[in-house]
Image (tube, rainbow, N blue to C red; front, side, top):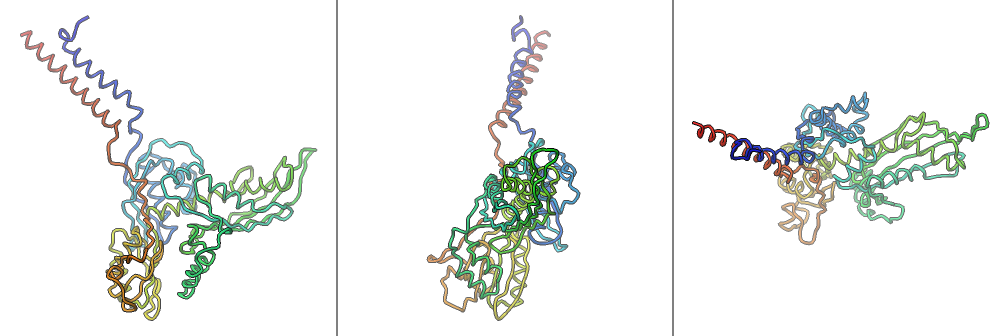
Length: 467
């Protein structure tokens, strides 16, 4: 066998072989199945639903660009607006991470959301349950409280829908809060909201909801047990007719963000030991959309919609309500125009102006309340911070009472504290640093190049010696 001195290709071939072996060994760990894409989503309208649709549209487009999959046709969805929560759940299975790069509500009434996403080309087949679990790991976890009024005539069992929702919520990682065991801490703030004319906020605060949870799931379930049926001596089947109405309320504002009123459902439950056991199974089928003849999946739909709303708030920012006592129309317009120019502000609405009392302005922003308060005080000269919460800031004229320089600048004085909630999620930002596998692959490639150079050098040297 010839050694490397007699065979000019041998030395270079050994180096090339070493590089190839390293690359083959690391191939399964490479990121060839992950691509980074920039995508834009759009939706018409204003408010939480349009924002959620625009974000979902951006993620759908990212999956189309990165994985070559049309989630709408794949899911056999005919109305994106009605079923965008299903598209959102499907998109989550393809996304390793994503970051919102910009969001604006244009003068044409169109929300435009731009994202940079890491998309996997092959997504695992996962259920809604697992998809929502994956989303929970990327985001902060919202706290929810559940209140369902339930009546099934002919069955003694009760609280079945609430039990299902609680188990489903805990299963996907949500915090479930039992407000019935709490005395509530918002009575004073409820009275204050009532005086200022914010009746919905006052009602929610009076129940202690705003201080205890992020979302309240409310609803009713009504039904009838119509008796047992038996065919040809088989075990009896218990028949139920059920209907459920569910809604999700944003506890910070009292606004309804999700409503689901599906058609009623007739269910036959075989082999149940009692009517109450059959009733529990019937409610489970209603909530999950499981079993022959099921027309609804209210439970998982309400969970998906809640997750979409929460994710939208985390990624696109939240709506913060400003109330200003003694605001003029000119200053209100200046606030709207100047805040709209902020990169982290997507929309501003003047809801009401009352120069003798309280004016209301809503700001959709990714700024936390401290930074937003600072900007408002800077733009609206003559106002100082009165009070700040995660979704609400109030201002009063500076001349009402002497204030410290810190407060006049919009900052908390030593004796005050301003709750701050950072609404921009950063846990899902893709890393720009190369990992160890990438570094080793680059080294392997370099070895191959060196091997080729060695082989060429030896060939040339041998040719010169032959002459």
